[in-house]
Length: 354
Image (cartoon, rainbow, N blue to C red; front, side, top):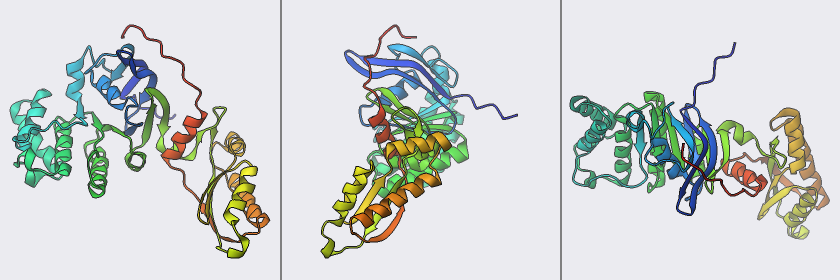
């Protein structure tokens, strides 16, 4: 018998939040399971509002939400004692030493002073700031200050970590270091993590699952691995869109060979992007949907059909093929495909908060 699925750490049911006439969230239904989940969407998509509702800092206009099986408004203290929160905005007092700040935040979550002090020290060591823990926050770099925010979220040994844009303001090296640290936190501390970000490559790097918001509505939810294999077809079928890159031999005698190949492939229903002599070719949607209905994932026959189509197009255009290879899907591809297939949303129905 298969093991029962782990209980969700967050469940939203018809979750709606408005501020005056502004709809921040509209009827969101989602269950977030254990692991590292990326909460993605453009700025203003509703990510920060969702996290505040998870913490019980605000009450929903309609619908309901539970965090670790508890109602975050009715049992706010109980929820916040088990949840560590890494806010997007800068909350660090410049004149306070890092260890005092982390200890203070741990005490606010209910830890006795002696326990809070030892937990603060452990948390700062775990994020790589053990040697720097007595420095004032104002003397630290942006990267170090972000690590202090992570340490204060960890200090009370939470079951759930909410990280709101943890790489904001960091340079590429610091971003990579922070992402590695987030992955190690899950491994060493066992905490479940929800990380909001508008940088999809970061989410793809560290997260098991994603929840995508678009204009306050749920656009997509699922495992990163599965979503990278499939994207939503026009009829709702999970459809893998095989994509290839083909590079043509530069030849002044054949003129605009890339343009000619593109025209032939687009005539066959493919989507084609051209950069100099390199073309990125995506299989026709109908072909992808047919492959998904038969196999549920990208299949070898679908790849072979597209490869044959590309070779024929190159030959028909009088061009010469230098090389051809598979283009791997990204989360951006998945979200763009979902947005293209999504119907125009209806206006949300507002009601009494649960």
